[in-house]
Image 1 (cartoon, rainbow, N blue to C red):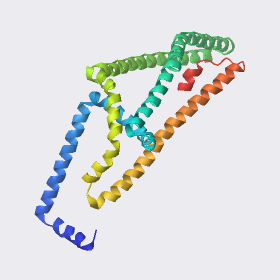
Image 2 (image 1 turned 45 degrees about the vertical axis):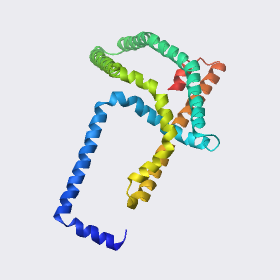
Image 3 (image 1 turned 135 degrees about the vertical axis):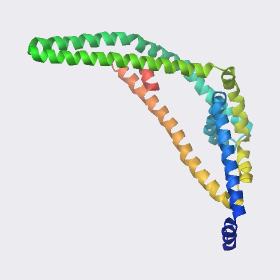
Image 4 (image 1 turned 120 degrees about the vertical axis):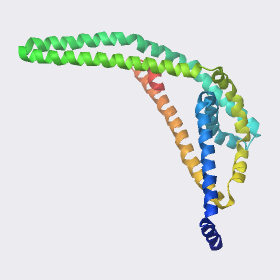
Length: 268
């Protein structure tokens, strides 16, 4: 931007008519953005599958772009699909069923842990009462009773809140048929998003003003590089930690240690 352009902007910005037009333009843009945000907020349940599809597309685009150097883009998308759904199929076949079984085992063993814990606490209390003075015993008993009452009240409140939260969440998820059908649409939506993703930069380039086009793309590339590497790095880290945790726990079991819930701990 030259010095003459800057003078022109300063001069025109000082005119009252230009100021009013600029203010009106920004007001209209703000109103449109708020209106679009309100529509998206109200239709959040219906848009959830498409948001998931966009996130998946964002994660898959680099791999599709690399494979496109060797094969056509549609073939690269199909290969990525086969890889992704193959991994999901293996997870559903070999990870999810035993993890669900171990979750049920944890739930079933909670009453046993509770009973054993109460027995241990009661034995400690009995031992203490047999050795402490009556005044100290009375004070300790009052504190123990108060703690038990508080714990029971908190447990009841937390259970009610958790049940209410789960019920409302499930109700919001399954309240519309559109939401369920949306997940069926995800593979097709994702395919066309990946197919046309290489055309998106050209479309955005035509919408951005030439004066800020270079700065816009530089900032967008920096954000994409940082955010993309972070997300993919976290997913890779989670996969490595989960795999190594399972291998380590399995090695402990083979060495004679009785470690339970190996798959569940690895998934967590």
